[in-house]
Image 1 (cartoon, helix red, strand yellow):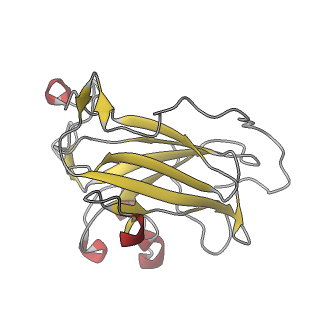
Image 2 (cartoon, helix red, strand yellow):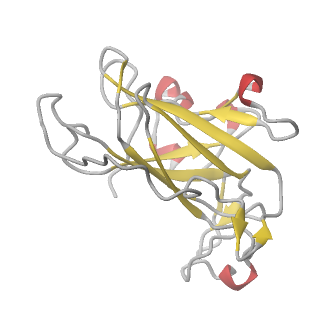
Amino acid sequence: MTASCYSTIGPFFLKPLVDGCGDLTRASGRTAKGQHMILVGRIAEEGDKPVLNSIVEIWQPDAAGIFQHPLDPRSSEADPGFRGWGRARSNEDGRFEFRTVLPGASREPDGVVRCPHINLMVLAIGVTRRLVTTVFFADRPETANDPVLNCVDDPVLRKRLFAVRDTALDAGAVPGYRFDIHLRGPSETPFFLD
């Protein structure tokens, strides 16, 4: 659920975020294991107008599907070279970027296996609460099975939750993926209550 475009609440982030917040691939002087990737997106409001100075946060499992969080029973096995959390700011074109790893399939405490995914949160001007969604990765999105994804019945909306491989974003051997976020309108990204 998004707020009216006439709202004028924050965030108002005028200074750049701390350098390196968008790079999850280095922690404690180590480099993350697994397939490194670039995740790029664009935040837009209705009419495809770019949204400047939005904050995008991601948190995800490492390449082995392990979260660095006490609720993950395997957290002690998490990759020490992977940060698991990052933050970026959208520029004047609405663009944001992360350098991370392709997440592995994770396991919930009850044993349910989750499709490879990245959790994503947006704070934007004109939005009265944070927006939360999930970015999924699958070779065949139409057959992906995940308890969160299965909450979205409409196949058109489900497709909007998948990152798209984009070779134009590749950086050498590091593949690029695109995930655009539409805050409202006919192309609105499905958001989840948190």
